[in-house]
Amino acid sequence: MEHFEARRSSTGGKGMIVCMSRRICVELYAEIVRLRPNWHHPADAEGKIKIVMTGSASDPLRWQEHIRNKERRKQIGDRLRNDQDDLQLLIVRDMFLTGFDAPPLDTMYLDKPMNGHTLMQAIARVNRVFGEKTGGLIVDYIGIAQDLKQALAIYTEGQGRGDIALDQEAAVNIMLREFEIVRDMFGRFDYRQYFSLPPAQKLNFILDAANHIASLSEIQQGDKLLTGTDRFKENLLRLRKAYGLAVPHPKALEIRDDLAFFLAIKARFEKFERRGQKRTYSQIEEEIRRIVNDAIISDEVVDIFDAAGIRKPDISILSDEFLAEIKDMERKNLALELLRKLLADEIKTRGRLNATQERKFSEMLAEAVKRYQNGLIDSVKMIEELIQLAQEIRQADKRGEDLGLAPDELAFYDALADNPNAEALLGDDILRQIAVELTESVRKNATIDWQLKESVQAKLRVLVKRLLRKYKYPPDDPATREYTVSVNKVLDQAGKLADYWTA
Image 1 (tube, rainbow, N blue to C red):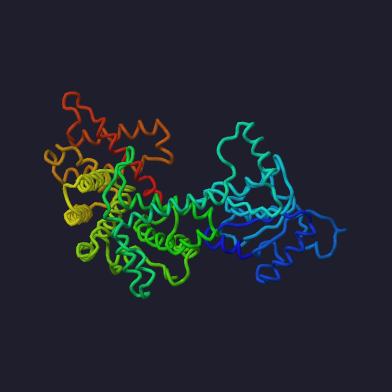
Image 2 (cartoon, one colour; image 1 turned 180 degrees about the vertical axis):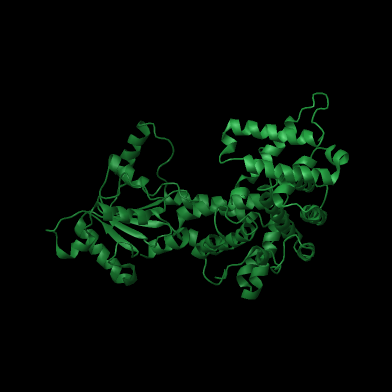
């Protein structure tokens, strides 16, 4: 039980015990429940431990609660597959060893002779891809080494590829190698000071460590230019996976607190990422809590502003007050990281409605980032440029208000004004009138799934061309008087607005 709970505290995975007989299954269950009474529950949908086995009415009375029909066994299997379900440990004799996949399963305790195909299938239960899991752990109580060699020979002859089994010592060596790589990224920054600091100073120290990682220079790897933050995340991911295979080996436990500290730094960076991507913030905090005790990380969920060392404003992220606070942040590299990602999210959000704004502001952001990466501007100047970009985004909203245009009308206005000659020749008033009529006409004729129907698209093209000619909108090519590019821009914008109109 100590071994399994140590594994679960770090990997969060589930376990399976394979016994030689149904009698052993029942007796082992009783002994585990004696040690952990709260794990037992008579209902199939409750409890942290279950037995899955077949049986009949003639079996002993104390076995009967564990004998289930096919439908009830399926319910137990579904619980094991669900990483959010509190079922942690399953005891079996023959059931679920072949043809059953439960990706969260990462530890198997084997106390039953097996060989050949059955053994290979059993081992494969803990090797299913899931999250950051690299592989599973087989704890051998019966001595399957020779049988495993024979099974692997059959696997190889059958054109199988890769190593299906890895000695835990090998996993420990990989873990230590990856640990060295992450540790060396701190250079002269003595991160181990953290463990002797009073709790009140620990959050600030994590921010200082994150700022150090963010300040590391970019390195070209293949066709990718990786920042210090990128490299730290990639190296830490490999360490995290190796640790999951090595724990609870003593050498893994020795670096547990270091790994927790690294994960706390990663959590600071993750909080800058857009919500809804990969994992929730609570899942990130839970991953850290699995490895570290309560002294290292608070139970309180901290938002991205607190993680960056600034108070959370009750105002728009584009307000002057918020931008001034970003500019005055002490840790410039974190300020830059925060502002860049917030702006990228803001631009992406606007892109759901306004294709022209998304393209324009994305290009401006990319150009600023490129100058920074090439060493043409420092972090302070980069922050100033990003603040200027934020102010231009805000001005785009104000322009819509000044023109009296709704968000969808402004989106068509921007698409029309993207023609370099349009504003000069027609002026704001004419472009505004075209945008209003265009919005009404396209919305009225854009039926459900119009983007998939060529006949509807053809009709919309005619309507748009007719409206552009009516107001003498400058053609894309004066020689041919064609509007192909402009019409495509309008229809692309209409596609962006489809969900907005049906919401």
